[in-house]
Length: 86
Image 1 (tube, rainbow, N blue to C red):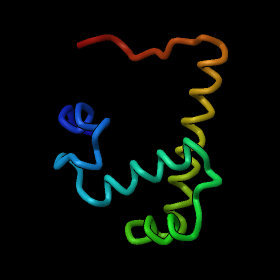
Image 2: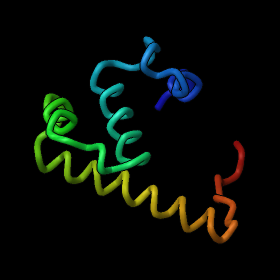
Image 3: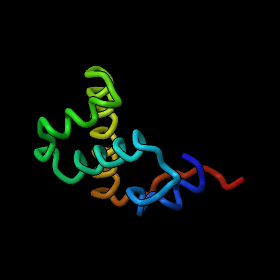
């Protein structure tokens, strides 16, 4: 992501910093994160406009892994290592 996209992430749906595929990907990640049971055939059909079935599985796994790591870090009060500032 570019710095502009990071700054616009909060309002990505209205931002011109993202194309339709990027907006769809962010929305999918948000749906999976907030409650994966909300992923229905309509959601899968829409994301399928941009990704193959194998890519959707991989994307979902990456989202789930990121959520798992975040929950572990939150539960154990672990601050992420963001590396050194340049």
